[in-house]
Amino acid sequence: MTASPTLGVAQAPGRVNLIGDHTDHAGGLALPMAIDLGTTIEGRRGGDRLQLRSAQFPSALSVSLPLRDARIEPDWARYVAAVAVELQPQQGFTGTITSTLPLGAGLSSSASLEIAAALALGFTGSDMELALLAQRSEFAAVGVPCGLLDQLSCVFAREGHALCIDFGSLEIETVPMPVGLDIVVVHSGVERTLAGSAYAERRAACERAASIIGPLATSSIEDLPAIADPIIRRRARHVITECSRVVEATAALRSGDVVSFGEHMTDSHRSLRDDFEVSTPEVDALVEVLTAMPGVHGARITGAGFGGCVVAACEPGAIADPTTFSGRGWIVRAAGPASMQLIDD
Ligand code: ADP
Ligand code: MG
Image (spheres, rainbow, N blue to C red):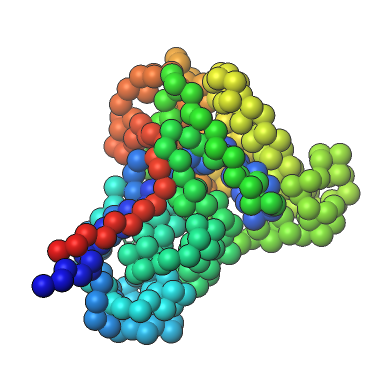
């Protein structure tokens, strides 16, 4: 009897963006790190149905292939359905999804799910094609015109490293995480609301600014007075200053200057709060509490904003129990990339 390799386990990490938020769609810079929290899809290939149950939701996904439209029920399954529409897999899949990530909290559970799903369903192209497929799937699933930050972080991750990504050239540099630096993620306790529509509105403001002064990634703050509208000007100022902060924070991390790295993170938070206006009072209060703690070098909101998680950089053990603030928090480590394992049985 010949064994067929039909049993598979796909794993994909989430990510925490250390600095550089809302810069990817403007062709700017960011410094994310894949984390040791992620999505696992386990099951069997075969047949002509896609059947997946997620531990997080009562209703399962159950559709026959080929699938032409991602707009199915339940809502959560649209991310997986969109991947199936893009990929047009040769065979079906039956299995379960488990996740150690908080959902909708800015740690990229959606891209992690899409990438794990693509691998489970038999994706075979290049890493960049995988990231692009997941980005198209996200747009098809929920209509959010997201950049590539989450998908690239998940696919190009390297254990023990952050990634400095240039979204203009799609060049990715690995940056070793220094020993003696804890990266701590704390949930603010605020669930994100209106993130999708506000995100699209912020993105449109950046495009408006770029139509006046040119690409924001290569503009400088001296260009800003040419933008008459004060809101559009502030949005552009965030992107321009955030890209500079990523350059400086990456250099600080490389040289082991963790204090200056933390200061750039806290400056980034102020810019996201005041210029990009994607924070909330509760998140601001959490950043204040964390940055006032001894041994904490800096903290900022991470991800799309409007609630979700805060990331802090600190001396080892300075935030010994990250669950004390809202009940949800993690000391995270830089993890490796998404992977797929086929098991003969
Ligand atoms: P984030 O990517 O920051 O976690 P999003 O709003 O982009 O937040 O994506 C969260 C959504 O992704 C969830 O509401 C759910 O629909 C889907 N999702 C992510 N992980 C899972 C999972 N393990 N099971 C089912 N759905 C998931
Ligand atoms: Mg997401």
